[in-house]
Image (cartoon, rainbow, N blue to C red; front, side, top):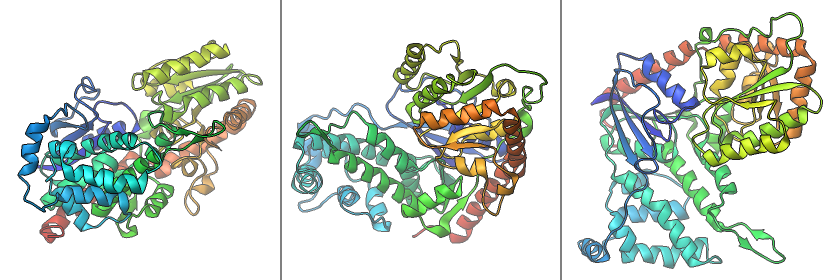
Length: 501
């Protein structure tokens, strides 16, 4: 049994990014603690080799998958179904029903999910499942849409759920899920079964991020009305409620619920979290590892203002808006824009971004550089730009501050708090950048133009950012808080003996 099992969904060690960097730092911070990693992926083969070298205190890396080969012969399945006693109903099926008709999460729901008494075979071919689907859920949730649409979405939603409920989670003194959603569900079930404490760290608000994705999803068919207007499908609400309930399961079971900012904690509380369980532990950086920008202190004309985007080229980062904003700004000022980060997570979107740059004829101003050693890149920038539609607390902003760079970022997650400071906290330091509205290239362009024309302002903002990161966001502070958290969980477990026995 390890000290901590980290439960990860679509991140470390296979995907680069802020959350993965955070996990890697966490593992290296406590060489005296042993860790097991449980990674949840979409299907076997979705990821290649790990992108990170695992430290010696990681004793195992196991994978579970949401999808696989689900072909089950009906005759074999029927024999499985007949083993259930007459009149007996699956507890997992009862929990599935509650997930869709209620907003409430309690120990009974968690215990029913943990029973694990619904096989994929029975789910695919059992009469009770079909009766619930056809006779109650469809009529309640989506009666005006074709039944077969609802049928296939119901299957696609719950096969991953059943696979996760069947998964074995490595035993540990503490379970730590690095999101809610699927990772939080697995952590909650393992915590319930093993009577061990569960820590949740929610970087971005999972349910809200899924809601944003669902609002744009093309795999959910809307109905075209008259005269040609689209009526949103209730299937979007069906999925959104499901993900919200998964988050509430994690919130309910969590011993401690950590997020990165007060704004995120307010979202958690609105979604049903217990205030007494919550705490804010912001991200941190080793600020001394990022040299100060040499361009800010250079004398004379440094040439075009050099703008850097640092992150994955994926839709949630809204690189399309970034490109359009830079194109608008180029009508008034000279810019050199570096898009720094991997493009392999969503190759279609990355190609779309490159095509937009070509279509606008701004290839001489915007370069796609791929992943780069950022300690070498930040000193060559003047401004860091983020146009994300959802964030937690971006490490990129803290790294930019460590290098003395101002930031232009959308008003999501903790970005405003990072740029303007907290009332009663570091607000007196002054702004360290400019906050813009989401998906607003005109407003983002105006911010870039202002900073390009006012070098003294951007240098002052860079100094404020450096002061802010050294005062509030040092990695040592984060490590001390998580060390104390793990210790308190281990001590609490010893004194409690078990959880909700």
